[in-house]
Length: 414
Image (cartoon, rainbow, N blue to C red; front, side, top):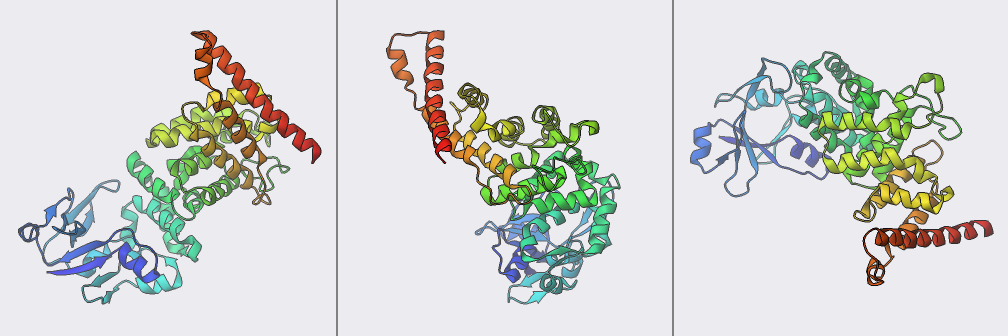
């Protein structure tokens, strides 16, 4: 029995990049022998075991043969005679098809180290096209390593296009699509993931609501980049600079889906897109089974981003309605997250990358003032029922009005 460190642990070690997990490959063993040595079986489709002490994953070497549709349609063969080279051959990219033995010697039968040096994401074999999930995986790796200068090999992009247009992506479960997308959105350059999916046709197959944004123009005065799809990529890029939260990045990605619903006769105007986008976004989130926290923030960003941009011109009563709409009183953190999306929306435009967003400070001050209203004092005054609600709203309106007056005076003196 021989043990090899494989996959991402080897790749990231050679890149001097932080490795998240350590996966081990076992060559020349059987499930019975693994169990006899105290390993715990956890794999359902193929033998994966947890080390009795470290709890790291150890998988038996295996080969795979396509026999059905989707990423689960494979017949696995695992036995003592499966070689290291046979196991590595079934992997997606050459940089993921390297192994390191217990003495630290690198085993690289498919040129992964050279591709690592040349910063190329290249498929190992034509069997790449048998697994549609690999389209998303390669795009995710591109998002992870783009800042290092990595590119996807042309021949690999061609296979990704073939897969995207073959109908195979439709056999991916919503859970797997979201899992890969969520991981990609948390990478260094999440916009690169969306960009590649669009280029190869996978975005149209999996998230048509977003794919429709390409080719939809915006007014050049506010959007020098013009194209709504390009704007979406820029906003996601800015969101990644502002926050590492998945819900913020997803909301930034989806804030403009309503523009894909605008009648072309009305282009480049998109009046009301913040409302037309809501049912579209709900449908996408339900189809992909997006977690509630991401779904809720995305819907709020879609609905209110235009109002956030106009905050300095809004009447205090409208600001208060905004606070009610996002449930500021029970979930005050929502305003901070939505404002991150709004800042990303502003800066996600060519030439606006360093733009100030005074609406952020104004709304945070207004929210702080409104939330500082003492409810206990109102109750202690003897009011009951609806009278408490009315008096509370009155005091909150007065607090926001005072902040607004201070801001207006400061702007007049500038």
